[in-house]
Image (cartoon, rainbow, N blue to C red; front, side, top):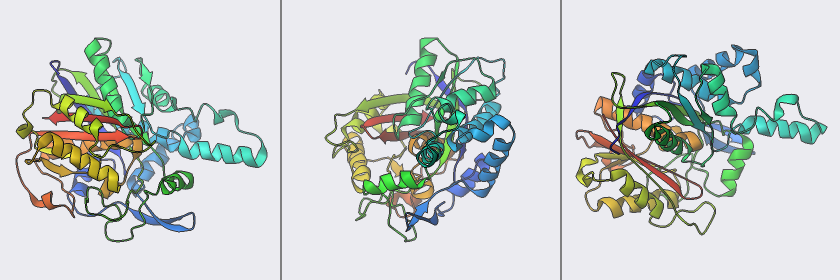
Amino acid sequence: MPTTISITAIASISGLGNDQNVIWQNYLNDNHCFIETTVGNQNTNIAPLNSDSKKLVSELKKSDSKYKSLDNSVLFAIATSRKAIEKAGWQKSDTFGINIGSSRGATELFEKHHLDFIQSGKVVTLASPTTTLGNISSWVSHDLQSQGPEISHSITCSTALHALLNGIAWLKSGMADKFLVGGSEAPLTDFTIAQMRALKIYSKNSAEFPCRASDLNKKQNSLVLGEGAAVCCIEIGRTDKTIAVIEGIGYATEILEHNVSVSTEATCFQKSMKMALGATELSEVDAIVMHAPGTIKGDLSEYKAIQKIFGAELPLLTTNKWKIGHTFGASGMLSIEMAILMLQNQTFIGVPFAEAKTEKKPLKKIMVNAVGFGGNAVSVLLSL
């Protein structure tokens, strides 16, 4: 990547909070963000927003009469986008693009409108425009009064990192100087959780850590869903606002035998990591924030892919899904945020039940992985 691409701000909202200092403090402890609730007459772990973040979203929804009709996935994106551009110092007079995607989009609202239709045979006027996938970026654009292109997409669980790839492509093409990219997801609905149960991947674990993400010895799947959003501002070159530099990007798609499978050694990850590395020496990568959704096959195949690329001398390996759950389309950017915070604070945040938890070493370059249904892998290499 000869063209320097800077991340000049990042903002998020999740079970960890919505303030970077609070989020970092929550990363420093071994507590997870899961609560137990009842879904389909079963005890179920989920990772909702914390109370402060729920209040922020509630106030946003009340701030404009038009926002009362919006799904949480849109509100999460608006809240984080406001914070990000403020940190980056972007003004309303600036022209910037927006690409904020989602795996599921307006899940809760769509289900509500569909239920109303089944019960009454009618839908409200705004049922369609408030549930389209493009709804997220278009409303963020409206809220920020931006003048650039607005794009939404779903590439399942790698959506946010594909948004980052797309934003970089726009910058390198010369068609834009700034892009706001990320993902937003509000999937904590009975129907969505039922879908994950149908795939037999949702956690039934009620132990200390319900999601055993990156535990390669687990005997049962342990995916837990979380909600949240994360966006970042990217620009060409280094600026006085630069908080991280994108050293390399990689992507790959593999031909699958099953709709949700990834090959045994995650060929897609091997290709995306190689592309992101470019000419970078393997020893220069200090840590990898894995996708590691908490499933037996998903975690193990990614680990084997990392072994294939890095050999015996593996970087430090971690993930945040044991703490905040899997936020589908937002997860990749939440991992980017974790990587940036570790670089800034020169502190590796490990997984409590993993061997690398207590290892200490200088952190100069960190790789972030994400993959979604369909074998769409993305890898991003970051440095300060």
